[in-house]
Image (cartoon, rainbow, N blue to C red):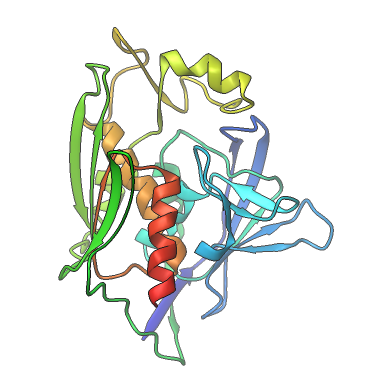
Amino acid sequence: MHQHTLAAEVIQKGVALHSGVSTSLRILPAESGSDRYFVRVDLPNSPIIPATVTAVNQTLLSTQLGTEEVYVRTVEHLLAALSAMGVDNARIEIDGSEVPLLDGSAQVWTDSIASVGLVLQQVCDEQSPIFIKEPLWVHQGDAFICALPAPETRFSYGIDFDLPAIGNQWHSWSLSTNLENTFITEIAPARTFGLLHQIEYLQKSGLIKGGSLDNALVCGSDGWVNPPLRFPNEPVRHKILDLVGDISLLGKFPLAHFLAYKASHNLHIQLAQKILELF
């Protein structure tokens, strides 16, 4: 068994989506078996927050890890990039409470990881893969997510919005056949998106303070406010990006077909917790 870490550090700085605060983040190589974890270097004693399902403490419009006092928010895009590109161990130092949004996708992260490359690490203790043998699912109304037995790790997602520019979209992407890392070209560039009629309410609720037309797609009844899109179905591809990041909190991807429809970070994490209970 082998693992990988970064060959050199990665540094990025930018505005956080919900807090609107500018934060700096460094991703450093980490020892074999140490997993992916965050370090709040802006706080006394630099507390560590593990990137694990058990560390999730909020899922409102993003995934947050930690406690009420020490946390890091909106981790999903970065963790999706690290995990899909095979970075098993990483020390992620951040000087604030939220990962910078950058352009709203994971493209800057994948480009940065690719630019420094990976280092092969030896693992002493053999890690058993996670095989999903029976269907697992969670739902809320007509929204659901399930993990189905499958010969490969695959993510399929469906969304459905009343806005004609989005409508009903589906996309499917396989991690197991990712020999040329299609995550970089098919999933990572997909940006976060929002609905024009919800923006004022979310801002008054203390959310999306750092959102702008430079880091998020905005859709209204007349169409996209800031085209062009990177893919015709960019919104649903972004949902797969979020799902990959959330499921990565299991530490390794189970051999399963993850099928979701109109789901959320909350449902993603509920399913991950179910899987963790079994394994």
